[in-house]
Amino acid sequence: MTFHIITLFPNSFDSYINESIIARAIKSKKIKIKFYNPRDFADNKRQVDDKPYGGGPGMVIKAEPVIKAIQKAKGKDVKSKIIFLSPSGKQFDNAYAKKLVKSCKNIIIIAGHYEGIDARIKKVFKTDDVTIGPYVLTGGELPAMLMIDVIARQIDGVLGDKDSLEENRNASPEVYTRPEIFKYKNKNYKVPKVLLSGNHAEIEKWRKGKSL
Image (cartoon, rainbow, N blue to C red):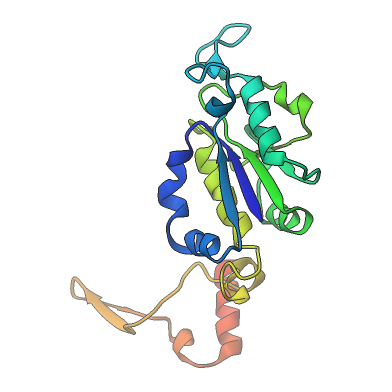
């Protein structure tokens, strides 16, 4: 799976993709992440945005440099999925992530900024309008990182153990490890007895109850 990220701020991804599971997935070639800065495709690299028609605050990213960046990312893969991040899009979830993993090898994520991107891009390309939640962020970089994480973990081998997918098992929101008991401010904090019982049926029952 290759993620193609259209963004004015590719360096904002550095600390995340170079650590932990995502970094290992890149190193093992389970995924690739490529960046396309619209500034590199603009006639005037200093100005990729302009005032919005109809008035209003902020600046709007121009369509032409973003379109050229998408064309570069898309290449000859007609099955590339193009995702337009938007607060008004459909809710991103695990079901959508799994569908992407099964249906395509190249995902293009358009991360807007400022007041947004010229909407005519969606008339040039067939895009999925997607949001990560009922709120507005200052840019699409964080949502793009979140989507990379959620989608990547659905790819075989990224997590190492397929049983690590919490959504495929009874994963409790409460987990514990050693020591069995620790003290804080003269009070003992213990691991629930059921987790020490060795009774796997009861443990699964407890986990299911917690997850509900």
